Image 1 (cartoon, protein in one colour):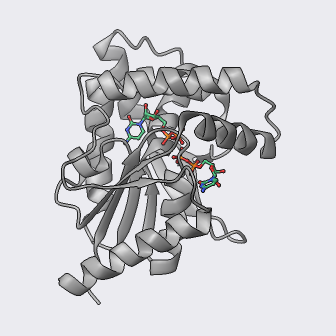
Image 2 (cartoon, rainbow, N blue to C red):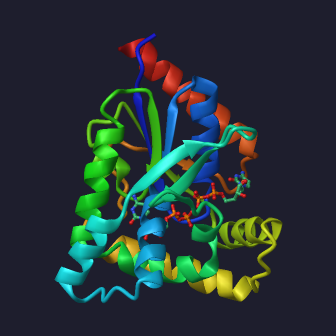
Length: 227
Ligand code: CDP
Ligand code: CDP
């Protein structure tokens, strides 16, 4: 069967990455977490005190950044590496979540990431999730999903996810972070989060994780049959 490109966009913590990962595993596709790339840039900027308002400093920092994904030998999961170092855990911390949306508004950052993402999707058979995948990175993606869920449900899911990774964060702080990021992500000048016209909305509020995975795999199957 022909391989397709699947783009999953949407708000924070509605299940994009976990679902995309599982869909990719079931279809034996490559999975790319584009958010992990923006998070890695943010980690580098914070650790190197990059002046985000200075285009020269931003350009220099971007030229020093190398982001790759490698499969973990035992878990089989893709992990994010920044300049050869595994940063998978670090980039999920709240200090990164608190700054990532601001960093992601910078045009040069977006151009660098989009160019890398397009290269990753050159051969089909890919699931990528983020904010601008269906609108900017792969505007001709065969299947576009716009994922959403009620705000409170998203906040509780994210808090639990952080708790499972031993990071205890107050629910109000999680809510404040999601609210702030959703606002920046949907209103920024450069490739804001939008629902592309041809995207299918999947509201995961009342869905079990397994259900949303099966739903997307079915949608992918029907797209493949049409090709
Ligand atoms: O997992 P969560 O939804 O919280 O966030 P993420 O997918 O890891 O993305 C972190 C942040 O990176 C988002 O809030 C956006 O500001 C930015 N991002 C973006 O601008 N474009 C993308 N394609 C992916 C992420
Ligand atoms: O990528 P995004 O920020 O949209 O969300 P995620 O990190 O994939 O998912 C946030 C958390 O919600 C994860 O711990 C998922 O296992 C969980 N979850 C879900 O994705 N779907 C459900 N129906 C229930 C929980």
